[in-house]
Image 1: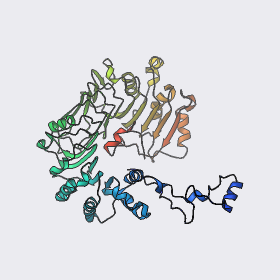
Image 2: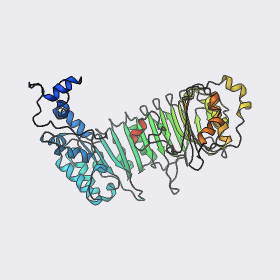
Image 3: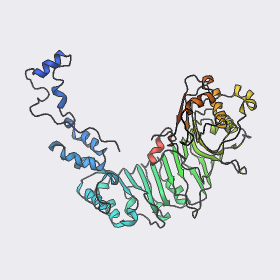
Image 4: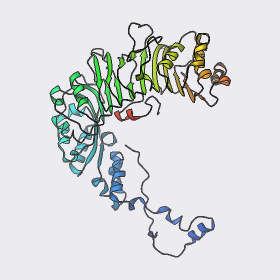
Length: 482
């Protein structure tokens, strides 16, 4: 939730109420002489926040962390009833108590707060360790109109159990839900409907292919779907008229069957498809997604030519494009690519496939020894419409083969605005930046306004900066927000 704002200021004893008449004080006269309006210094301590209506104060308090929201009761008598009458934002992480006692704190708050509770956030292990307590929470009248439920996965569990039946008694009011570390039986999901659910996250959940398909179909306004280690079947097919963003993290456990195929069959509104980890990632096929603008982190292994990692309709992305471009790929603007070996051929393929591409994120396990692109693409570059505005190169070492690759953008991308080089600390030395300016020929750059940034900050990790299903609403999920 939002950060705590400034504490309300109390009106100083003896300070006049707004509209009271009084003679000008020496302080007011001095302020007027210095150009400040009369009374400016005296009004500095007036408590304007407490004069707000209860409804606005309650909305402010409900956006604070739980501990801070409860503490507002000690500010003044004016505030004592606000927290109890405000919509409750009950976040386990914002409470201060011994770990074993925190569940009891949640129970006491729900039993004493008259509600409504709009958000409940708690670690998923309580579903296993304290099923009776969780069931009591869900039956509390304070949760009758719950909008947001989050049972985040905070530890790995081999054996998972179904959540108590009361978990879904407020499915008609939920707008955001994250369910972690449990088993969702087919029988439980057969008849459920979530008419208002827009964001759904499943973390370390066991669910069958049919149940997941039915669950998506039961959410008619679902916009964001985050699946973290919750797919143990080989193929996931997405059909949804409302989905806008999908994030997927594959199971890391070798004992569990991995997702091998992710197929977007019909998703007319989908804009983002985000793979959160590059290892063991599935083959992705896009059949119908006319508004898709962001994809990644894609993975291409040069030593596995038998099957391409990514296809758009009849267009296959691999070493060299060899099929015609379909309309489904024309809106692509942001691509994050992780490859075993990166070279300019990959870049040219992307340019041909995605003519509107504006942002490129590259992560390479092994860089090529040579990048002889000037002679090979001499004639093509003159006709190739390069619209790239942002480029990020991770694992950049600053050696000549790396510099030659980067020069493709420096010397040819006329719309380039920024280029970021993520360098390991072992490769970064005094004078590194000055040497790179010469090697990259920045004085000959095609875009005179482009900025070039060299950093050792390795916040650019193997995937998008996604920790919660609501993070999928970011315009660019690969843009580092550290």
